[in-house]
Image 1 (cartoon, rainbow, N blue to C red):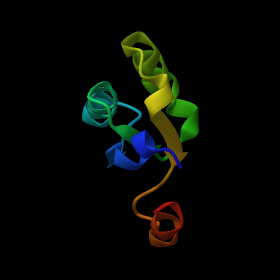
Image 2: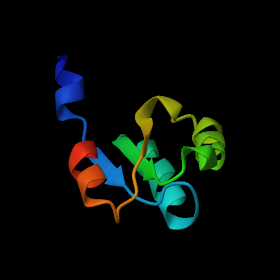
Image 3: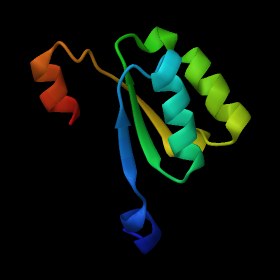
Image 4: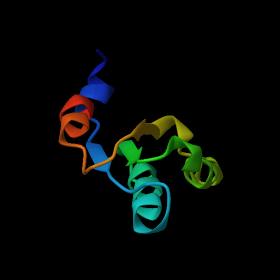
Length: 78
């Protein structure tokens, strides 16, 4: 693993398909974080993808499916 990646901070954001979750995901990626952006329904990823593309941070955001009320899914994703 390269040293740059080892030192890159990572953020895990829930509710990233809209609102504050979306805004925080893009802002953190813009600040150099590797962002794991989670949402319940991956069909709603379009707004986040568009915002990330506009901000030039698509390479720093990974979108994952997660319903935080499903405890076994939380364990799997984490």
